[in-house]
Image 1: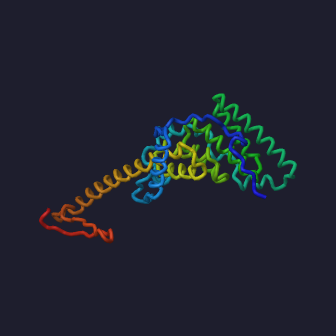
Image 2 (image 1 turned 60 degrees about the vertical axis):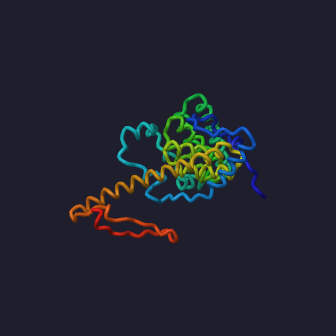
Image 3 (image 1 turned 90 degrees about the vertical axis):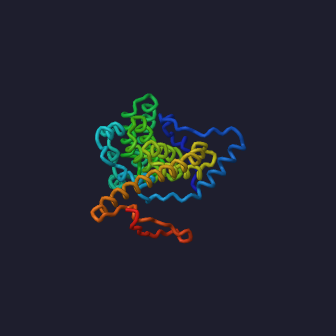
Length: 284
């Protein structure tokens, strides 16, 4: 029998998480909506080169440079509550090994109660305490209840967002999506977090996924108009910076030989797209 499609609301997802608004494209008429649909279709065919010089943000670890100091503390203030405080799936399953069906059902009821209490705390501005209750619920919610566990991660992410613990919130959103791939709210939360962390390519991927699940989701539609242009502009800027750095390095290496990068000209073959390098002695 096909599984009943359960909405986020039935899982009592935390509401009204305080996410900074993102500039939206105003669309008031069917004609404008059709224009957005055309742009989305066009942008979906673009090839974003994720691996090219880290031009679109790379992985989370790859974006870390020398700013792991006070800025890191300011952007992720929830160090006192680590994202890995909940039991791992293996640990949870080990605990459940000797539990009866009745005991597992009782744990599910307790987890539901903790979630509701956490939701109330979240709505009343007590985000840190809500996070603790969501974590407690994750530590007893049966491992087989994937969607319920997904919403606990999603709710905890919403609370972490309120505390500006973006990286930890991304972790929770990812865990929620792994458990419940069509969890639209978690996808939207993660997309917004990726934008705040300047990871637009990953944000665009999540917005596209939201649009696949719910084509009427306006925020996802507008993001597919807004983000590709930003990504391409950022790529070009990073390419220019990379070429400038390479030119400086090349000039330094060639200087002892009385040469510079000006002696070498790159020409692209219009047919194959490949480059050839020509040497010109007179440009030194």
